[in-house]
Length: 203
View 1 (spheres, rainbow, N blue to C red):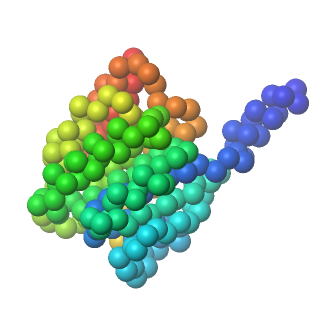
View 2: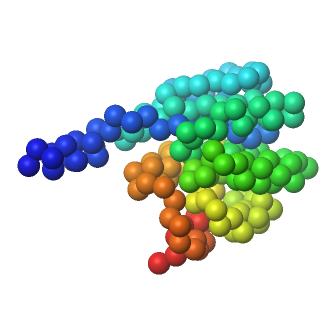
View 3: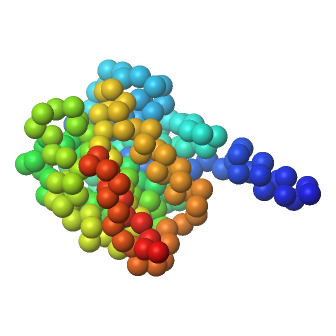
């Protein structure tokens, strides 16, 4: 009985803190996203020089969320933060069509890193409130997300200023970390709504 109680206690009140690393190009909205998650409101931000880190609690789960600077000269340093990472959040400025190929290359680089094997990949399609924003389906194709077979991934429509979509993205990460590492079976793409696309194991 005591062991069963312990299992349920750990399920509802886990002690582990999960690590999330948030990356993306400069001006994508990473720091705004971080403090929306941490404080529940938008705050004035400056370009991140180095990193910001905050603890975010969601449904009894504790996350240590690292926001890394996205300027070109700082991206090579991202790898220093990858060890023991449970999930990556890649924040994208959905209006920045000119640099989508740069985002694709950065995504491919992190997917190949040994420290990120088994990490969930959440792509936040930010700035969806702007009329020229690329929708998640278009971004998914531009980033070749359906071709990813090494990681579970999800793309979420979001607006960091209003908070739209952020809790949905964190819910997906929460389900992933509760369920353990990514499945080793062949993944299949599931389109859940026009705002979200998920890669999950095939049945």
